[in-house]
Image (cartoon, rainbow, N blue to C red; front, side, top):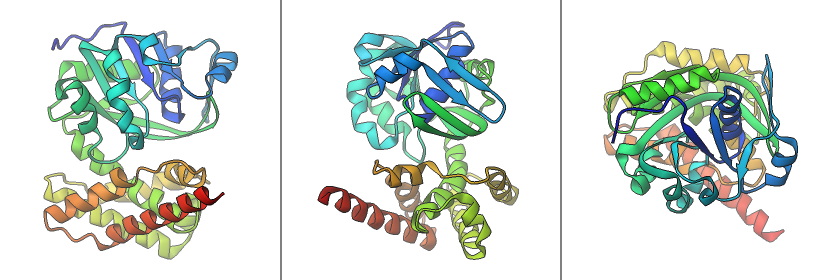
Length: 318
């Protein structure tokens, strides 16, 4: 595969949810050729465009290029996978029509082990991953509210940074997304879990509460820190050193988010699939594989699994 990445790439956004619309709208506003796969709510997006509201700006893409099928989009230079990892069984159908010899596929998914399903479909040499520190949620088709623009970390799947990695990072920087290329993608995934595991998980397990409620409760705050420490210990066994200052910073930035509903809580309450295995199950399995005890993390995993089963049972009985 060529290491060259075109200055004006053709970009596909697979998944027109919060992150897909947020990053796609920024790329489109910056003048890039962006094509959205929008299988639900397409009529509304075509009629009203894509709107993104952040604490400092408003973005309105009045006539986004939206499609019902990937076949209509065709080959692209960059494919951004913004689907939830729970929808990865759709990748064998969605990716092949978009991917050519030199196409890069960038997955924005949360958790551990999310690059592997992409690589199984298109081959590992095509795959990049991104860790998104972004507080966005969708209020209606094509309508996104972003409380924390944050930053994006991009890395290669199983490889150090290459010129193409930096080129993709530069692309997002031009679109107003603070983006860095990192040598070790897996380390960045462990770091993202340090926030995702406690705050997404406890928001669900504590009965559907926002992050400010968790932070205001001494017991929940302590439990969040203990969960983070278990993840730090597990990551260290895989050679990923996460300093204490990073853990402290998670509390500081969460306090700035105010009344925030984590994405997993939103999915849980709206009856949608939750990334149970990628965010909680896989870290448990990897920690146990290297002999690191993670009792709080394991308990949280089983609690959420039980709550999801009970929720789905209620939905089926309606």
